[in-house]
Structures are given as C-alpha cells and as structure tokens.
Image (cartoon, rainbow, N blue to C red; front, side):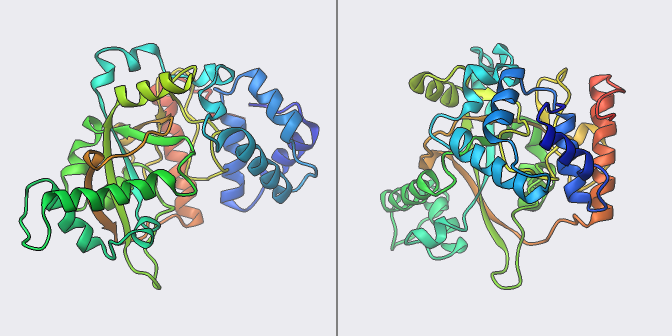
Length: 322
C-alpha cells in the first residue's frame, strides 16, 4: 500500500529507517498492506492524511479517520468500499455458517460496571448457569440475570462498536481446552495489550463463542455489504503486534507471541460486525497472569519469523519486501 499522499509517504519512509522497532513495524504494516482498495485508500489519504511529517500527527489523523469511518455502528470495514478485504462467500455458506468463532474479551470494564465484584464470583455464576454447580443462595435464573448484566456491559462499553477480531474454535481447540487457556490464547492471538499489572494483578478475560450465522444475520439486518473481512491497517490503531497478510491467503494470520517458529501455529483471524452477546455466548472466564515478552529485540524476531511464514504459506517470496 504505497501512499500517493506526499506527506504520508515521506513520513513512512523516515519511520522505516527508525531505530524504534514499534514505529518501524507500524510503517512496515502500512507498506505491506495489499487488501485496501484504491478507492478506500484515496478516501483515507485525502480526508485524513497527516498534517505534518511526524508520527504523532499521522496517529492523530488516523484516529480521526477511525472515529469517523470505522469505530461506528456501521463500519466502513463492512461496506462495498472494502470489498477487496471481504472473506470469500464460502465462509458464510450454509456449511461455513455453522463454524464456531471465538473472541477473548476484556472483563476489566465489566467487573467494575456490574454487581459482580470478582472473577471468582463470575466463575461460580457461570457454573451455576450451566448446571455444573449448585448454590443455595443463587439459582440458575439469578445466575442468568447476572450474566446478562455482564453481556450488557460488553455490548455497551466504549469499544463495543469497533469491528471485532475473531478466530475459529476448531483451529484453537487444544489451546481452549488447556488449563492455561488465557495465556495460550493470548499468545496465539497476539493479545499483548491485555497484560497483568503490579497494581491490579491478573488481567480478567472471558472467552466468547458464537457461530458465523449469527454474524451473517446481523450483517443482513443492518445492510452490510459483507459480514466478515480480513483485517487491514485501516481497521484499527497502528499496532506492531498486528501484521497484514498476503492477498492470496483467505484469512489474516495472527502473530504468535510464543514464538514457536511453527508456521502452522499462525491462527486464522478475521473481522466481523459486532453482535449482541447473550449469556449463552459465554464459554469460559479466566485471567492472564503473565506478561508476553514484546521487548524490541524479541518483537523484531517475532515479526521476521512471522513474515517468513506468511511468504511460505502464500508461496509469495516477494511479500513484505520493500
């Protein structure tokens, strides 16, 4: 994605030479991107190009673009303007619609916004709702009501309108079944932005599951051109853990923070329209208890290995070569 906007082009050229691994990665992502169509790119550059050749000005203009066009009830991501990034029709076919999607959601906001004061309480409530545990002080109906409050918070929090990153449950079955699933999914899905802290301790998360047809029905109701897309650099904030995938691959591929070097460990990822969560979507609750190593040297190696895997999987030795 080579910009025609002169200011942005000069800025990217400078960032690609930066000693700051994160800034260099964010510039690489923009240049590696192949799925943003000409019309969408032109609109982005004309209406939201940076006002000056420094990163902070690009970030400000990019965030303005996201607020105006992407972080809204009907994101540009799912309109015909982004047709180049739409998933193949087979993904939402009769067979494809039965596939189970998963998404890890932060509970940090919900635990402050509801009557549930701790992760342990939520885990107990979920077990009662699912008939796995009995409690003389709480019946299944009460448990459902409390879970509905959690879902209300997830559906209405400030980030709820953003396009949602998701993956396929079947592909990640071993990680999901592991007692260490929060850390394993954090690594497989590249969720470095959900770290435990010294002040607040382990980071609470919930694993949501739902089927493709639920996303497709939502898209039909709101008149979206397509329900699911491959993530691009124009669908979220600049982020060094994200990496664009070659256009020849059907899905995006997550950057594996575990750094196994195994190309089969790059999970397929997609973006979809928001759906309203219900208690039946809640699969598991847990906590991320360790921090991922994203130090500059580690990040540089992870991205280099990831790029090599993308080239191998797509049979594209030229992908990511500037």
